[in-house]
Image (cartoon, rainbow, N blue to C red; front, side):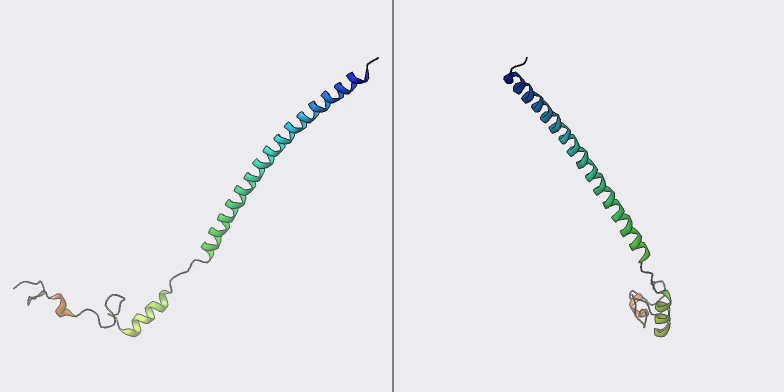
Length: 104
């Protein structure tokens, strides 16, 4: 027969081994869970970026060419954003000379 002390020591050793194995398995499970969480986060960020790109593409503002054309037509043909409705003063382009090419 086995004495009670040997039995309790054997039980304690088996419990310790079981606890060590359980701790190792728990650590492995935690690592796998952390990796899965990181992958899920990465997937969610990519999905969000894709959705934002689609929304931005759908909501892209187009220039209203017809309104700009009508506005210019109402102000006269020389109207632009740079010169205004009166255009450029020809005297400011002469460079102080009397000819069209600026010569004497």
